Image 1 (cartoon, rainbow, N blue to C red):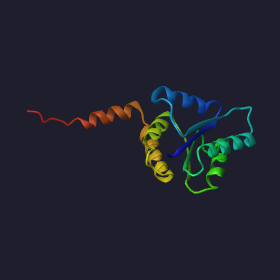
Image 2: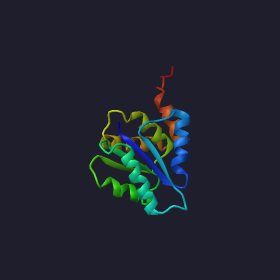
Image 3: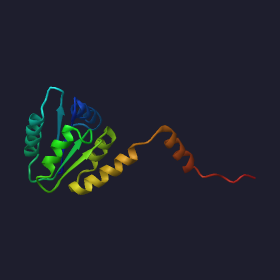
Image 4: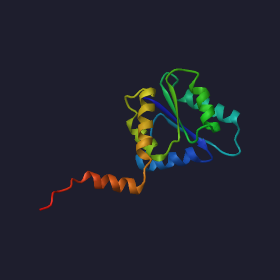
Length: 144
């Protein structure tokens, strides 16, 4: 099974993991690693390396991060580039996390990446846009 490592600033990863467990329950091949203000790049690198090893290095891994260019993203990117079958996705939100945890069976890391990006684009919307879609979906009946 495709492994997922979720990481981000502060309590981002543990908070998202807690919300995920509330909705989906415990998930296998999933590790969340926070990057609190008191941490260092070296410590995060060590933690992410241990997580990769714990997820069975024979399997493909996707890193989900919070912020493009941030330390969690950069460390995950460095680890991802060390071996084929690893991807990094940034801008993670709860909808993306939930959908992709459920959809990952049978996906390789590349297909996961493509689907996650589609999910992310689909999930960023507004009430006005969603109400507009509902109105558009109803066929207009001809008057008398």
